[in-house]
Length: 170
Image 1: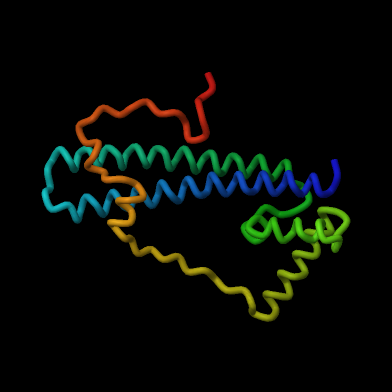
Image 2: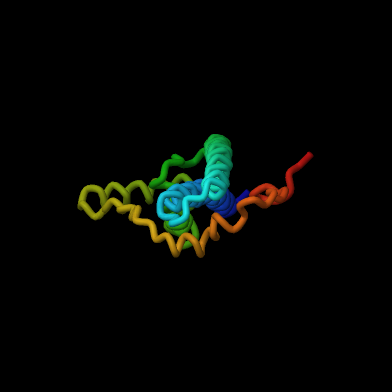
C-alpha cells in the first residue's frame, strides 16, 4: 500500500467518523426542537404532548446508540490509523495533511503529520487560531421545515424503519 493510499484510507475513515458525529448533532438538535415545540404549541392537547414526549424518548435512545457507534468507531480508528493522533485538530485537517503528500512536501504519512504539527505550532505561537462559537439560537419554523411537524404523526402507528446506514444485518 502506497503512502497516498494509506492517507486516502485514513481520510475515508475520518470522514466516516464525522458522519456519525453529524448524526448525533442532528438528533440532538431535533430533540431540542421538539422540547421547545412542546412549550410554544398554542393548543396543549394531551395527546399531542404525549406523542411528542414519546418522540423525544425515541430520540434519546437513538442519540445514545449513535454516540456509542461514534465512540466505538473512533476506538477502532485509533487501531487502524497509527501514524497520527486522532484528536479534532488532526481529524478536521486530514485533507490538509493529505495535501502534504500529494504536493510532494512529504514522502510518508508520518512526514505529512510532522509538517502539519509544525504548522499548527506556528499558528498557536502567532495567535492565529481562533475558537469557533456555536450559535445555539433555534428557529422553530426552520427546524419545522428541516425535521417536519412533530404533530403530523400523532396517533399514527410508527412504521418499521431501516437502520441509519441501510438494512440491519440478521
